[in-house]
Length: 67
Image 1: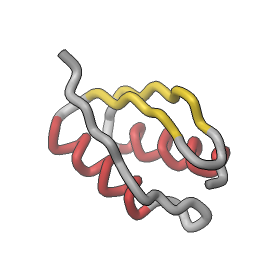
Image 2: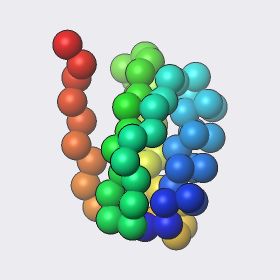
Image 3: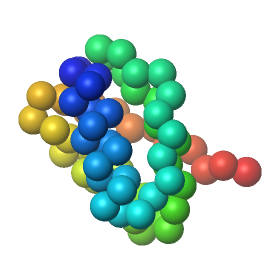
Image 4: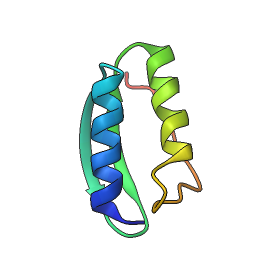
């Protein structure tokens, strides 16, 4: 995964969907993100990430609800 490309992609999508986003650890094999907002828009963000930018392949997404 090209982390710079993915981070730029994630930030842009979150902004378009009016979501709060925090980028955690990100390297060539994984990225940790925290996204907050309307549930349907978080769903849309997840779908966008699964389609991802052309130079990043997202194989698995783990989603956790915050308490």
